[in-house]
Image (cartoon, rainbow, N blue to C red; front, side):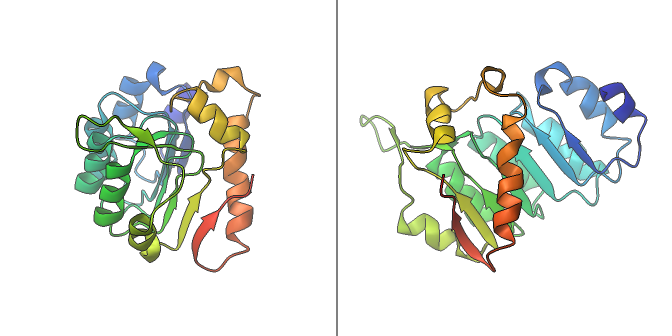
Length: 204
């Protein structure tokens, strides 16, 4: 399948659930994918390398979906190289509160942010330990108010939220039903049609 993609220069959307196996090949192939608009992938070791390649070669790129830890290092790469990114999905990922605020403050072109089922961590000044954030505060909601859609789910009763916490923010997708990693995306698309603008909390 991947080999076929390499020979498809008009490729617009690519989904890579096993990124660690193809990272080097894909970064080279991005040179050919001038029309790439959307990429879904797990987190990677060297985000700037990939993001810079996308910024250089893919003029219409607008949608990135990450299935893995998303830290300030990754966030800074997006701000530096893809400041006009419109859609960012971090669902079922580990996300630090400071990183979320950084994204909201600096990705000025962002229209849709999906943090549903994220393991959101707040790190207070030492020696206090980090803690899981179970409810978004007023500061985050105000910063997210400029978005067209801010999609969240942080329910203790939600199975996907439970799985993200049990897997410590690095979802072991292979343990669950095949195709589960993409089910929520279709659900979100349906719900987005039912609201006009703003904060969308998924009821699981």
